[in-house]
Length: 108
Length: 122
Image 1 (cartoon, rainbow over the protein chains, first blue to last red):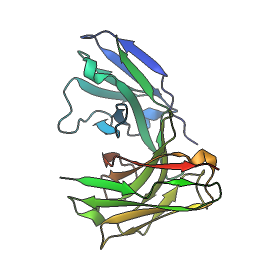
Image 2: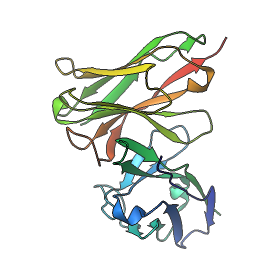
Image 3: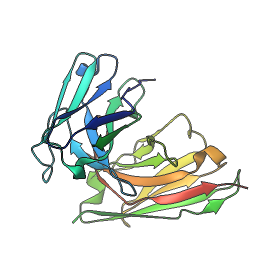
């Protein structure tokens, strides 16, 4: 089965840039979607199709995808960005939707 | 406004059954595939099942195939998850999520419900 690998945690100071990587075999050939989940809340889509932002998501959130790594970048990080972040792809070989294990973003 | 409201979560013994429901509103229901995603306590998101908009196609994670059945009633704007032979490891918050298209494949989940808790314990 297709595996997505994220770092368990990332820490960043307020105002700095956070990068969360999502690794997978030739993930650059897939479409990657990113979700933000705050404690006690449902996930929220923040990036779809590698680079697109849903309406209402700040421009500070951006994405990229190439080779074996997709990246979610959060610029000018704010305390309110502290959350768990998940990447997701569709595994066409098995008709399965796959989530990465999640990264806890801590704002110092 | 898109709304998804799950219900049916409960405490159940191992080997028992439960049916979850997700009532949808605010969009053309049969134009979207619907999925169930679960989250065990303190763990990450785990895709469970997806049903296409017309209910022609259903998909299951290996861990639930043969035990869970997804269905939908487009006249009631509701999707269901029938869970049989429940195991302790099925304990989780179950979220209902909308896919962007009726097919759902290659899609992301653009709206999520607030979840319903299923606890499997003796």
